[in-house]
Length: 617
Image (cartoon, rainbow, N blue to C red; front, side):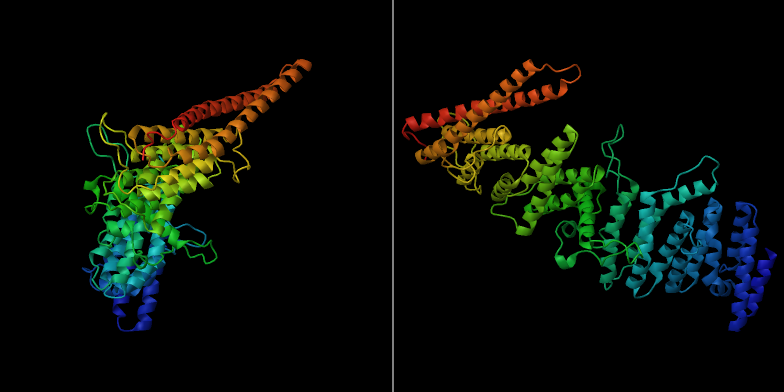
């Protein structure tokens, strides 16, 4: 170590002679490299590093001159030792801070970023080095007097790349000892995300009003950090015994604190103006030939995660008070949730939670319609939920998707709810989903026409702002009437039995409810509508159901005769029995259609026999 001190002394004596100073700096760093590589233990390497830092400390004679002379080369020499032990890592981190505080700030950032590439070709950067450099950057970036936006954009990709690496594949620990390389790496990787958040806080704390471009970049950076740090993890876990609040990761809480100073208000998260979207794209890869990234989609996903935090976490944990949501805010939250439904299971659970929270938020009733862009976004989310209702393997998961669909639908104004249900019923190719949608439409009618609270009260009026009732009857007609009009193809039975039964039940409900409330909102009780329904929907359907029942019975009898003629061999009965079971199920479906259809026809014919007497108007 005395040799290092001697070379430092020689370098100080060369002050003013640029060539000699450069030669002495090279000799110093070469001697440092030799001593570090000659160290037989991490403790010995740590002593070399500590001694070296003492030589260029501000308290040492000529220390500032030494640091300025060797700063461009010394970090690349000490960088590989950041993973050797906790002590070595602390010494390397101290060296990074020395560079950050002792060199020109912009120059220090360049030196620190260059140190991250000094691991050697083909070698991965150690987490100890990432952590050390990040702490150095947190000290240097706030000191830059101007044009900080460009410098921050230079550092951001490296910081985000580290976050994604630790989130995707954190290093495993070992039991070989506290100072083993693996344990140092595990510890440093665990500290790294918090160091990145601390860096962003340090820059935001020195933000000037004129630095609008930097603030916008920091807003995007904060959203990206939030997205990466919550990937694959729930926003909160159940409260511990004796506590009423859920457990929220400290890193998430610290990241949320970045949002207000970065200008990310609840309004800007939920419904930003197009020109107000946070930041320019911050890439985390230098691969020019890599797959193209849809930056708009990435920003939307990041906003969705921020919205989930905004609406799903307890208010005391949030960095700003959340104002009451408008109907458009609730719809925007549901629209944002759609991008989270594409990932299973954790991201989808955040999407479902966001929809539920948006629907539960109090908001005044909105008449009319949403802006088309918002309506399109909500409908896209609901479309995704219909696929989850159909495709999720677990009944509980399908039920959760159904609950989210109802919640998402509820944020729409009545007219938009009807148009959405109409669109899905008319276009969805999946019969089970269409049947569910028809049941939801029946629920809408029940809310629109409540029963009188007691006998003798005046007829109920449909709630203000509701959709035109005659459109309900049109939906029933499009479902039950022959496709292509009179003489067209009737609904196929038993394949469409669930949908037919749901439509018949909806129509029957209309007849009964409007008779009970004494008001014909949909026009279903008018003589003309009753005649049309009987002749154009119900009688053709009765004929089709009878034909389907006869066809199923003929197939059953033919199979029974074939089975008697050629009994199945042992072990070969599965196929015929399976087919027979399918036909039995088909027969039951057709029978259900016939039963419900019979009840509906009875209601219609009874009303027609009354000749319109007492028909509600």
